[in-house]
Image (cartoon, rainbow, N blue to C red; front, top):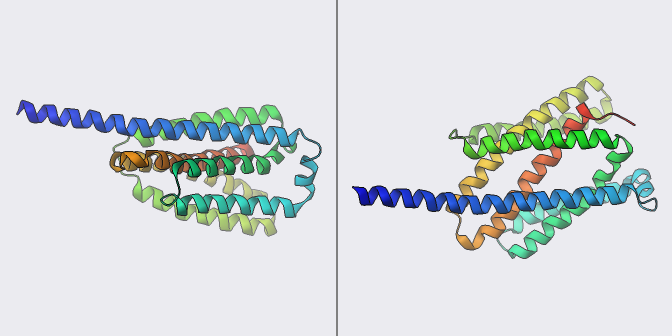
Length: 233
């Protein structure tokens, strides 16, 4: 009996180490991607030859948005076909392109407001990610519901482009915060579950796709919170 108990303990410890290794890679890649985005956004916002083009040209902004969507879809669809290095490079390319599109927030909000919102986002994101990592509750049903809710606010956002309703905009922002807080916990739990069963040679790819998911959760949560805490210049 002692032997079997010892074996179970050793197996549990090995599993914890495996999951921990993957999650460390996930958070590291996500952090580096956020740094890349922030530095790019700051550079663009402070470069007179670039910033006016983004602000005045809807075509340029539209092209950047299409590139971003294409990179997310491409990484997700081809993650099992491309090398871990290629996946990582594409992820950081996405983070840099996203920095271009996010640079415009520096023209609408004060630097202090952006910094304050970033730290609020980091705190709430961290809390929900910790919850998703340690909870024994299965978040699958909640995650599925949140995905449908996300489609709902996307549709509502498109409608509000024409409706110009401030009330609807506040509702969308509030619901958006709730959705991405929940998705942060759900995605963290999914990554943890995948790490527990993934072969060791796929850890790099899993870390990249996991970092991409959490990066998107963080950025969207930040943008929705910015509507509440951002002070317009």
